[in-house]
Amino acid sequence: METFKQRLAEQKERHAGGNKWIGTGGSSPFGHGGAHPEGIRIGGKSENRSAVKVWEKREFKNLDDNVELGTRNIKVALRRLRRFARQGAAEELDLDRTIAGTARNAGWLDLHMRPERHNAVKVLIFLDIGGSMDDHIRVCEELFSACRSEFKHLEHFYFHNCVYDHVWKDNTRRGTERIPMFDLLHKYGNDYKLIFVGDATMSPHEILRPGASVEYNNKEAGAVWLRRMTDTWPHAIWLNPEPEHYWPYRQSIGLIHELLGGRMFPLTLDGLERGMRILSK
Image 1 (cartoon, rainbow, N blue to C red):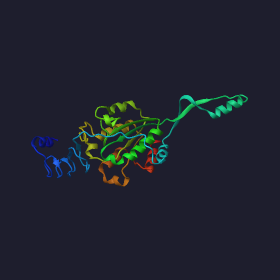
Image 2: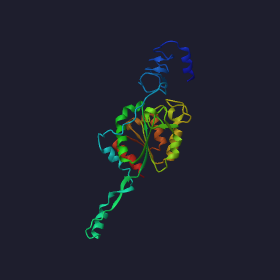
Image 3: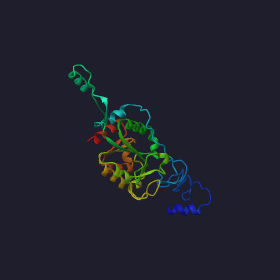
Image 4: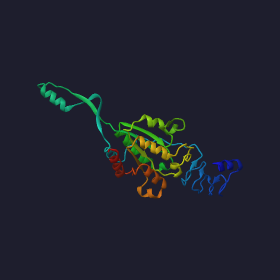
């Protein structure tokens, strides 16, 4: 960062190529369109996805929870995580009691009502958004839609790459309406099930080091926050839309896999079923 500030002060004109100045192409760690394993991308489109900082205001879109699923199988897989309870006002006809009461009443209709059955499982879902997750929007929207229909007690939050000291509910206002993670840790009890959805693909520094977030200088490492979350909500899994055979080649996936105690599953029907079995224990 100090070198970047120095280049900003020294450079007076546009530059392309080379390994020093802020510009396009080349192997300089500053600019865009070039090749550098740990650079700062300034403007332009993400091509190699290797930047460790992004110097721009990026806009992410909310996931659509009204998307029609291409298959009902995702919902079927989620139904493994069910614990029904009757809650609320007595608004549903209790047919068995009505028949029994009517029989005892010599044929006079004796109506009995009962509260509706609802899935009593409580779920917190944290969704990685933007960057490399743009490749997986469709499947994430399908999952999000299924979760909204299956779980009555569902709270969702967004993050980018790794969870740090704040998350947000609306991507269009993420710069102004951030929710401190400490607030969530104190608000939701340990009876909630925790689901992360993300490709876990980032620089390992973003997980292990303070100040390494791609977007701002976080005071504590992502690993610290992940441990706090899994300590608070021990029934936790990570769903990864990246194909499972890619995982051994990405160091960051291995780190998060370890931090979650091996409870990372591919975002496939088989992976969902395995994940739901873990959460239902």
